[in-house]
Amino acid sequence: MRIYNNQLVCVYSEEDLENSEIIGKIKGRDVLGFSIRESSEILHYEIEKINASALQLIIRNRESVTIALKMSEEEIIDYFYEIVYRLCSKKSKKCCDEDHIDECLTLEIDAGIAKSEVFYKVRSKVIIRLKLNLS
Image 1 (cartoon, helix red, strand yellow):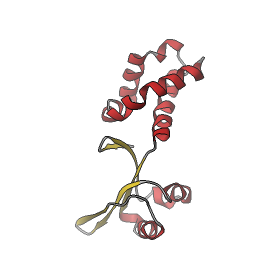
Image 2 (tube, one colour):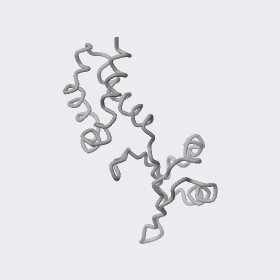
Image 3 (cartoon, one colour):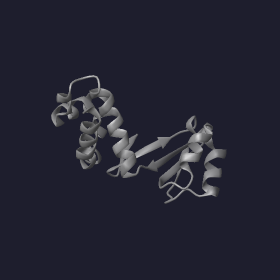
């Protein structure tokens, strides 16, 4: 996971593209683009949706390719929720405190992601879902 242009993106590289399950997840998705390393230069292709020909190009060049997928709001909520739930589920309900969640998240994942605008946009939804599931 990375932050790019105030968006949370999921980045897949060569090893990931050997897995047919991941290839299935990529098809028809919103993509920021993909990059292929060719000797000393990196070629970057910006595309909106991954089509069959672009996916074939990626798979053929999987030893030198990276692809970045845009995450939907629901996927972003799920991503942060799973981290926060794992950190808080073993503790008391008091750990649902927003300041405590921010502190734990910063310790657990990259601070750039934890303190990003992306997290703050979905933070209240993550906290509500956490409180519902821990009650």
